[in-house]
Length: 333
Image (cartoon, rainbow, N blue to C red; front, side, top):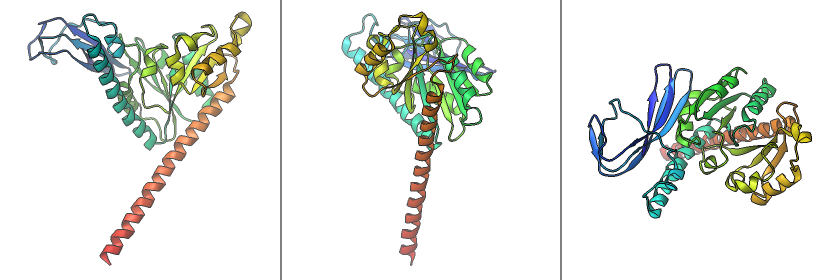
């Protein structure tokens, strides 16, 4: 399995899954005697980035430069192996470990790149319809003149969310994952370098709406923030524990709707802390403004820490250079 990445003349990048049956021809540039997996990206002029998995089964010949048909499958990450017919358990584990190890390497590169620039990166995760994009729009508007925000938007299709972000005046890049159910660090690495957030700014990564797959994939962010809408039910932390265990902050969103629901806030918080005792919780309403000052203060504290860490790194490097120069001068004397 591998993914093909296509870059269009308008600059949009998208990627999609590609699968071949045995001995399926593509213009015959080379043959494979083994299954393999990689990704392809496509970049469009509006800044949209698409990424998708692409798979080949056993023996087949294809030419990557030639036009060829694509057969889509569920998605190209570790979860695919867990339900791949005919694949033994050991091979599934090896594929999952390989995918996550490669992702972690890209995440480390992203984290270093962001840290060198003092950029505070937040990975926003949730199920579809939790209100992430509306919350992002309100956040950008509230931070105008205080803190610069750039956004990477992840969705399977469309650039609707990135368009909403750009309407605020903030810069945004859209990644469309096709059949993929989450962003990965490789996609984000390309997108962040295209976006080039300002030094000392905040980078908000709005992941694909999904409370399962994004939990396992480090993007190089400073923190995962899980957004849970009160319309979803207070039992979600126990139903999707990996996501809540991976998050540092839970934003309990749409609390303005509580009078119309039977949602138990205290129970939800208790379940979230049963899964993750260290998780912080802020109750917010993007439409009415509840909890927004606390959320903005959390972001500003994180941005301050990122800038301070960068300043400390720069000061340490300067001190090291000064020591080396002094040692060199002593050797010459």
